[in-house]
Image (cartoon, rainbow, N blue to C red; front, side, top):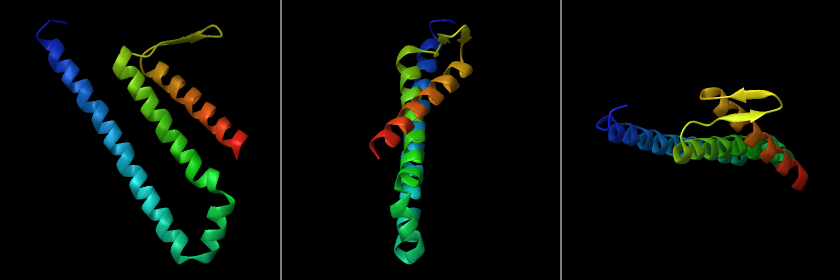
Length: 114
């Protein structure tokens, strides 16, 4: 890669990172607003939301947080590479495995404290 292309590549990565953050925040706001409207309009859904809050709110939030963590790690260190148990993942596969591990860790933590 030529030195002239490097700043453009960095700008593209920065723009993608911030676009991903904004998209996650916007999706979270829409999701929260939708849950709020459903919970205030229908009594049955209030009960469902109260009884299954960790599944309805916690797991989508865990997915979003795992996504932000993986995007942030890629932004600071470059392509994510993961090696373990005889497997070696690079590029997009490394990011997918990292996302799954982050999501599962957060989901287990939600289950442990709920």
